[in-house]
Image 1 (cartoon, rainbow, N blue to C red):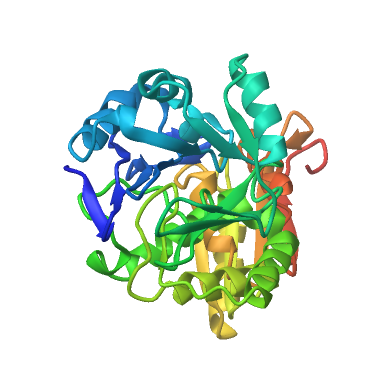
Image 2 (cartoon, rainbow, N blue to C red):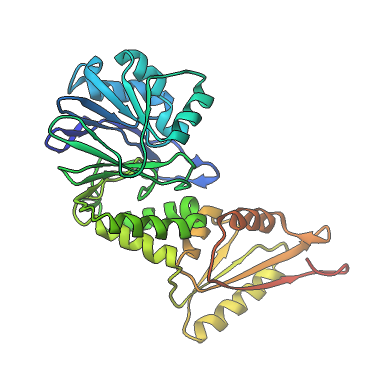
Length: 346
């Protein structure tokens, strides 16, 4: 697809990764995008870059708008390579632009790429004039890396929050109102698998931004679709998810060898349904762990069942528990069940 003007003088110049199916152990059956943005003003600004293999795709979109050497500033909101992977290439192509990043971003980029660029570090509340527009910065450490920060264009009320508020979704559309409510399902899966362990920090950061009185007309994340119709919708969803709000939803997550644990799982499922719960049966070898985590986000009860293998739990359950433990789900009611033969249970 071609470059896209989001607002007058602000363009999407990112890349679409149609084929990626795994992202750090998180299934991405719909691919993803690496969003970069170009702002034209007295000083031209590139906000973030793309994963290294997609550099030429980004460069092509930039070149449709301006000669790349006319870019004066590159903002690096985040060190991770899906957003900084083309940084050295674009810096070389431009010819020593100013690179704005957080202090930890500077340290991280220098360690990753072993290059000393023309850095200027920025802190929360700091602003940079680029002509008719002003860029403001909000440090967001551990959302989701120590270096993370947000960039805000005051005059256009556009927030570039990098990995916050995104989705792993490759699409010909660029705005959330073009795809319907499915976007919230993708956003929930992204939150649950990437940001859930950081819930307390998210609540603090949302409160901090609210106290700053920043009006937000558009949220342009670094993955997936841009929130333009009702950007508060995704902010409110993040608050609810981070507060641990749940519904009458229960999950029965299990694996089975010879059917005994499955019989137990189905009996438990029936009991939950009979009591009025919105219950789901999830077989570990039929559902990816990241999809089960998404289902867990708004569930109140989680029942985990495993057969015994070699005097321990079944490997798929061990895998799932290891993954789940890193995400630190809060406010859930857990139950365990399982089956065994001659040697005792898992």
